[in-house]
Image (cartoon, rainbow, N blue to C red; front, top):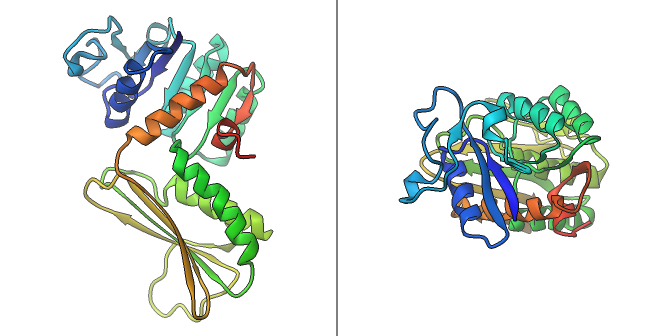
Length: 266
């Protein structure tokens, strides 16, 4: 059995991950973490499901991960970096679904991957990662005469924008076209903006309600448009993809991987 720890155990994603672990035949709950101010700290991690797992939600990393071989983390950059250091020191493999990292934080994750195996992806959903692959083919074929816009929508509680998934879509398209997203991305338009620069990639962000996650990449040409869209209706897709990542890591001693590695899309 793969002993899996869950960060942010009392949050929406954390509970979905715990439920997914409990439903498998090859994984077991090996630990549960949450911030010290969470009222769930000290409670059984599956109490909300109506039964006890024997695993308590802890704010202390040493206690919370004492029995874990893997940690799945969908929290925030500051918390994930603290978890990363503990995992590196203790040989715990890591699945990172957190987004919004700085370049320096990404570099630290890459350095840690020399010692432990890490899967890091802005979106763990299998379908989204298939879309990344489709975008490479689309961008290669539609490299002239098409304007590219990325539209994403998420729930009102999401704190970063554009989403990590939208940014990764932009990176995939830009890399395929031989561009640097940092130089060609446009994150907002207001007022008299002038004619659109055809070398740019535009982003539009929507926040509201309980939208789990919608992403569309629009290739707009003359007389035709192509839209590649992925819509998530449940966080269960992220949970199932995360468990596939855990199983993949069980065969990796160290290294930094993406979901394209997990799914064999490279």
